[in-house]
Length: 161
Image (cartoon, rainbow, N blue to C red; front, side):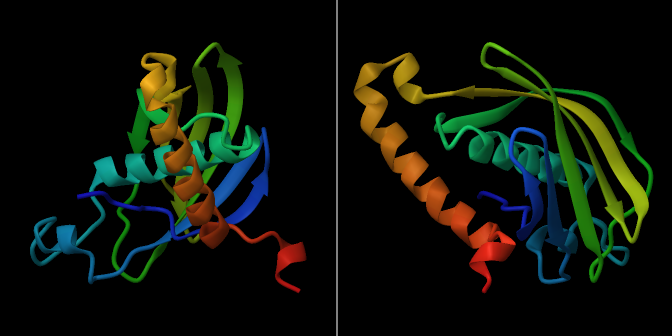
């Protein structure tokens, strides 16, 4: 099962910063178990939402040069508040540095201006063909699908007219 934890990209400054949102609905399956009678977004999924927002920032900033962007490291993860059904988690991620395949990101999530989670992330970016040239077609298909999803998540103001 794959969780898509970004519903919309609200603001984007390629190479610098992204602001994305996740609307938490009671219909999300994992809430039935976390916790019964007190449903809240699991902390690991808040971290995943920050990772996904940061990955979109990297992809769009580099015009989808890499098919794969994954979490390599999470540091200083701090949880401050719960995210409950009916609330909107607003995630902000900012690139703080790059070295080789690694991109360093400072990220945080908040609900109604109150911080819920924060972390320093290191993402790894690469193409599958880097290790196996026979996988170049797989890279192409992945990038094609990511571009389609990106067009659904983010529509710059000039496209809305």
